Image (cartoon, rainbow, N blue to C red; front, side):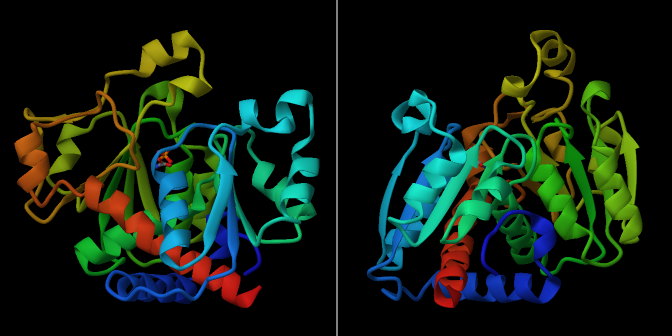
Length: 303
Ligand code: CP
């Protein structure tokens, strides 16, 4: 594995190895990446992805440089191409974590980089490291990755985390995915074709509550306001959510997940968020740290 560009590149065995390494890293620290440098180049905002990658590198003994607002604080503002920026940065560091607003940008970057490039989200394309941490969370919380009913809810058209997670779920057995979205934000046809090809059962629905009682995982997503017109957003917002009126419908063993940040699609009291095991999204975000540590080890020990 040279670069991390899309979920499809990970097979089952590799995923389980990453999960087992992430488990080890929860308790065992190591300075194995001393002397290595990671660059974060973020052309879109981020809290979790950038900071967890930076923390992962520091915890492994490495160093971090970067910019959290590359659109304004890099030479992109003077008109430099992404390719030139990556050529230069890759001569300074050992790995680049890139978030960019254009689908396909991570692939473009990987083609000119002399060091591994990790896709930290490319427009409405993919967010593979989020998908791996999502899958790791399901594996930890449900004890496996087969025979699950998973609701994917919200913006399924522009939400890159859902696309990336579907590509991974398609590798496991006897799961059922129920896609629930506003009519203007349905799951992409390419994802449905992939699931069909991998014999993964799925259906599309416009209702959330009737499915809550059978779900093992409810994966909610934010409507990606920044990727659509105001009219498209107004037609989609506020249609689906979890709050005190429907949270009680979830099975005790169900897990409520969200890549975060969430806005009005989750509205639960702090006490419920803090004590009810079914609320998994904060544990999910924490899991990102260990998964990203495991990925950095894998990339930098083989490069
Ligand atoms: N889930 C996720 O990508 O969060 P950030 O945008 O905060 O990185």
